[in-house]
Every structure is written in structure tokens, then in C-alpha cells.
Image (cartoon, rainbow, N blue to C red; front, top):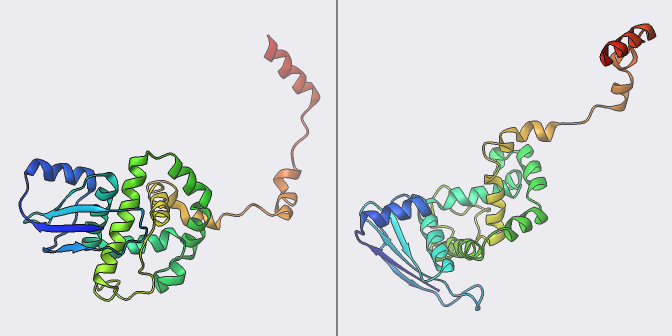
Length: 229
């Protein structure tokens, strides 16, 4: 498992391609080479090369999609580690457990209900193998950054937080499930969780249900007659 880091200018066209395909990242002035033989799974090897431009934009190259995702995940963690770590907590329905006053009970109830193992499995089954490789690599790259830095040395916004940990493919599927609801159901989490069926007593006691008027048979007959003319 290896990541090579460089700071050097790369062609503008390449940078635009990276920006569109992988997303924009913040600045970093890292210039290091990393080699790690302690991999989580001996059967998987990740290799990526990350080149930062003078503006801090990462350009990732790799020999396969696993390595590409690995490099992107590592670069993202350098720039936005806490944002994804927090998303994992919220999408997993654990905000009340870990985020204190920032937790949201309605959100936890909703995403615990929504992000079931069955739903995540169906989402994963619909993806191409290359996508699965890239996402698996992304989780490994993000987690590698945490191992390299240590929980005390990451962004102060979440350094040493109890909820900071390495992530897995399953965590990312949970986050993607949450993201798929943006602009839709996620805007109505509170009302959805608070919704409840009317009570039986309320339905039976409704004056509207009891006071249906009896229709004059003559009128009905006339209506039927006109309806068929």
C-alpha cells in the first residue's frame, strides 16, 4: 500500500478533468512519500500518486480504480476529514450518541430506518465493478490518512473526538444513501418522523363521518336518467 505525494504544476486541462470527475479540495502543502505494508486486507493492494498544484488542487493517478479511489480518499481526508467523519455519524443515525447538543433525534430515527442493510445491498448490487473498486479504495485511503496522522493530529474541529474512526465501504454506502435524499425526503425528516395515523376513537367520533346525508331516491333516479341520455 503506497501513496506518493508531490507538489508541482500539472497541465490545466488535466486539472479541469480532475475537478469535474473527483471534486475540488482545499489547499495543502504536503510533500511526502508514504509506504505502508500493514494493510487491512493482504489480498488488496492500493497504489496512488497525488500531485498538488501550486494552488493546492490534487491530481491523482493510479493503475486501477481501487488505487484511484484510494488517492482521492486520502486527498479528501487531508482537506476535509471532519466533514465526512461527521456525515458518517449523522447518516448512521448516531448523532444523539456522539454529537451532543448538535445531535438530532428525528434525524437519527429517520436514517436508522432508511439506511437498512437491505437498501445498502441493493444500492451496491446496482453499481459497476469499477465503481465498487473506487469506493472501496476511497474508504481505505481516507482511513490510511487517519492512521498516518493519528486522531490527535487531524483537523482541530474533530481531533480526539470519540466519533472519529476509520471508515468502511458500508459507511460510505450509508452516506450515499443520505445524499440521495437531498432536495427530497431529507427536507421533511422532522414531519415524517412525527407523522402518526389518526386514532380509532378520533375517526369514530368524527361528526363528518356520522352525518353523511341520505340522498333522496327521486333525485338519484333523475341523475341516472340524465347520465345515460
